[in-house]
Image (tube, rainbow, N blue to C red):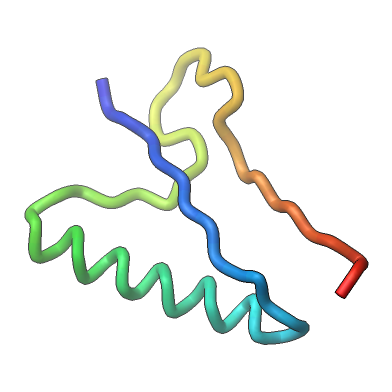
Length: 63
């Protein structure tokens, strides 16, 4: 059974959040490529009950 990990970026202000996510995904793809690990950004990569798995997005309106 495959495992599922999550990671966080930030804190970021404004458009920087999108830049940080794109850069972090690139770094993650390069690391997994070098390690010979398969990477999927699909929140539910296989059928079945993955309770709690999905896209988690947290944000704050306070700066």
